[in-house]
Length: 504
Image (cartoon, rainbow, N blue to C red; front, side):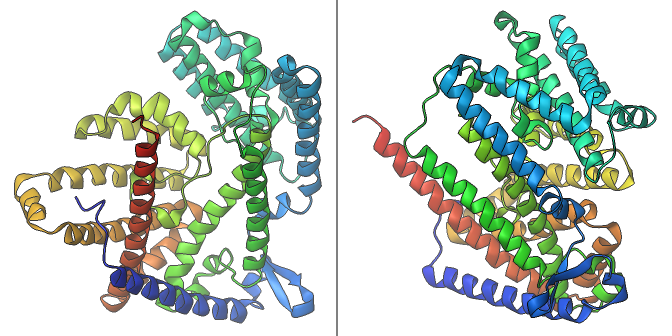
């Protein structure tokens, strides 16, 4: 109720003013704290010289981001540029063989990066799941896939298999886990799709073409086999009108995002400050809140940049890859919270939707979420912090359904029915604001640290209660209302578009 209801323009204007003012005030406090802490001993390892000509240092606490755009930048550009040129040549000369050419190029790139033994190890996993798919038993394929995934996540097998990589280099562990994990998910998707469509008779070659497509190989996103095979099998793919312009725009946005992050890290040390809890505890409550929020936004930007670059290359190859995750700023329900849309789609198709059905009943939903987060825990690597993260997010997803069921209960449903649609939207936005901070706190546990999460929770909920708690909640409420207004506008535009497309 109230989802399509517009609020007065003056009210929305007030929300915009409050939100922008609060972010500016909190951002100023975080900027001043970053300047004050730039020369602290505790910051020495992760705050390094940056723009020396204006005396700015840079937050380099995220080694992956730094490696991507320093020592490994040229290698990444060379590999993806080579793929694009090779793909263009194959499309012009032998378009019917382009999927095989992509696979050969990808396999050679893996061979050159990780060595022949690692390539042979992945081929062994591919063959084992292909053989399982021939038996036509989905439970066997899923079980073997999870066992293969566990072998890359648990000792002693992970230590033994990591020895198959040739040489040592900075991103070796990241590439090993990325290539191995995504290979298992892709092979499992292939096996499950083979069981679901026995009449199509997929071959081992189809699996290898699917797995060794280089842009997706190490970092994803993952496309389920049915989607990838259908799109890659087009002999003469045709681009939609304006597609090249959209590809260029996406590439430009990725470059702008990279530059924006670089600039941001010269002024705001959002990754380093949480590592020094004494210093973080001295921040103003507002600065501490925006610091916690910024950590999640950065993780989203990092994923958006990575998938944006990869997706640009994939779209040049006439693929329609999974889109980057939804921005954390626009999230106020656990059901839409994910940082990798490809893995989310994989889990939904083969586990969550399969068990949970319509996701409207409490017991099936509980079983579906427990199974989904159990596999997610295995994917992330079982450890105490991952267990806690999985439990919290599993609880959050189920709690939403419980609250929804409670709201549909007779007395509460009658109370809401007695409210105007605008008031109903305001009430729901208030619950959305509380949910927004639950999402932040539950995910901050894994993205930063448990100690920092405890500090933020204590300051915002205990020592800062009630002024800080209510102020943060009201500012968040304003943001949720603006997000809802944006969703309402997009829904109306989509509805008008469908009406125009209907035959008269």
